[in-house]
Length: 152
Length: 138
Image (cartoon, rainbow over all chains, first blue to last red):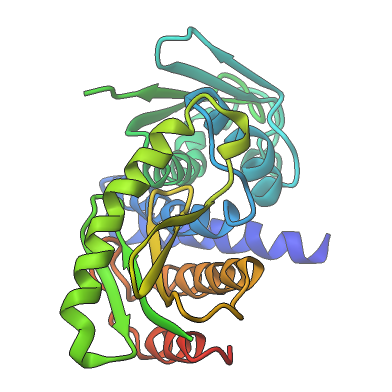
């Protein structure tokens, strides 16, 4: 437990740092930090893993192993339309669990999910899947990530 | 014990190449280059067959003097190792061990924040460790 809190604190500080320096609430920097982290991290995490057969298998890896290693839990639901759209649902997203639940603090949610959007995009990018990742928070601490694979 | 160790990026651009014998460098580079076609072929075949999901690709091809082994990571980075074909003492699992160590070294190099993914590997630490690996005392 004690080592997990360090990551939470670091993440909170990164969020503060990125948003302090530019007043325009630009989440791009935060997303980019996530991207480079994910890109490098996945190289290490897939070291012992057999080659992925297809896109869905890669997504499953992201939702189980990758999520467990970073957030100490698996995602609650993964859905796909089999046409490049994936919806990952986490009912208690780690970076949102410290905020009081409900809709009151909803305006602050985007800055706590931007890093993870980048993280997932970076990991997929290094595995050869070019994607766009967006997040949707309807009520804290639940969060949905929409992954749209760009096939071209 | 290995003649040449090469790291090839996902777009088939060479990231790193080390040879034990400078005089043969050009020839070895040619061998590595030729091996890429075999790697591609093996990866394509692997789409359906379940037994070929391993990252280690095994012997790609051999010539009179060299044996060329391959390995592909999940991120499509290729490792090619050229060894002396007259060296019968070197067994398959030793080649596997070389690749395993090489992958550890590569992931460490990639996690260096000063390294930009896709650029050639110029890290001195990486180079030193690969030289050691090539001489068989990693």
